[in-house]
Image (cartoon, rainbow, N blue to C red; front, side):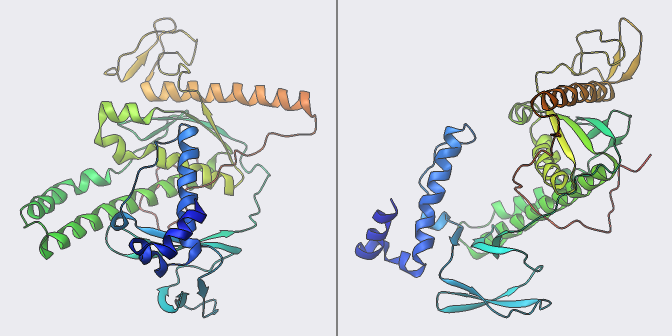
Length: 356
């Protein structure tokens, strides 16, 4: 496919605009195509579809066709040479490690971003700091409920901005299609959406660091996010459960913590955390009252206690298997590749979890 793309680039007049980019940038398109097929075979996405040139928002350069100039460590603005043109960029933070690829991306606000992917040696601590294990249950009323009864209420950033968003969208919809005012209005909407997403991501990072300050092992339940969106719609997207789990796994890996996810079919809500009695519980019932021992707990609190119990069983079974296979081996950290990285905000307005 890469050879065929090279022929199209050089011989067909229709594809001459590909010559504006380096040869590796054109070949990287086929790499994305292959990754999309592999995700489809792994049942992680759908089949790749044709995308027009106007809708293609990024391109990637590998070893050639780019050069990072001005090697001053503390300089805020640096120069990036792509092809024969030199561009000025804002240097966000110092780069560590070996740079492998450079991706130039245009977001919905028409801003250009330069993304460097690097290989860096990260020292992960392997010594337990607190020795605590916690179980957590996600909810719609309270974002997170711990097994000790502590809760974290998520600030619904989209719902707070929804009245203003509706007014802006109403004004934009009345503009003439194709006019400059309509384009500027659409960029205004995109800027508001990006700001909401940035606030939510920042709060997720703060909460993830707060949990890692307290616990060494954190147990969660694997959720069917798609089914939850069909039932409760916009609020599930506003809470961002899936994004929080990705961020927490990345933060926990860097800090030497461990994340355990129990199966989604594990019974946690209708099971008494005190005596093990099973009973049915409707979605509208917020209190769990055991029909056997009579204990009364909040619905999410009872589920969190059952989740941490399942985590203890998982740790016990894994430790027995490790000792049987290799007595010197220890259960390691759940290492997964991160999707996001963002520096943690030091001055936090939302600190739901504190040391007991």
